[in-house]
Image 1 (spheres, rainbow, N blue to C red):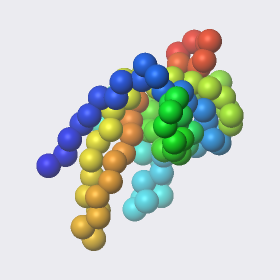
Image 2: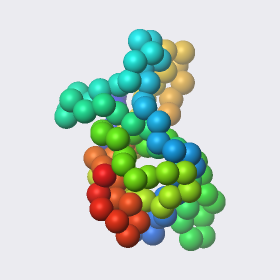
Image 3: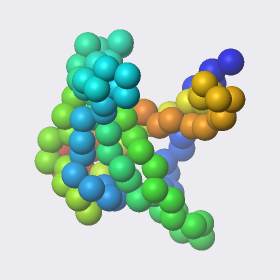
Length: 109
């Protein structure tokens, strides 16, 4: 069973750890495409921090190129949600996806 969990971002900060990169399908080696929008998918490795909590690095997938975001840039993911997944060898994890990003103090991408 796959869960889709929305995330409350009221007290969370995001900083790009690297420049965004294309989300690659490991089987085909081609850039993934959103089944919802038809746009190519991009991956943002982000340092996520919140007051009183330990910072973590996560990977967030977004449709369309996140224009204007570069390494160390602050942003807010809009419509961020976590989904559970199971690997072929029985492992489990979370993947993160956002509808778009908003640059800190800037326009939406």
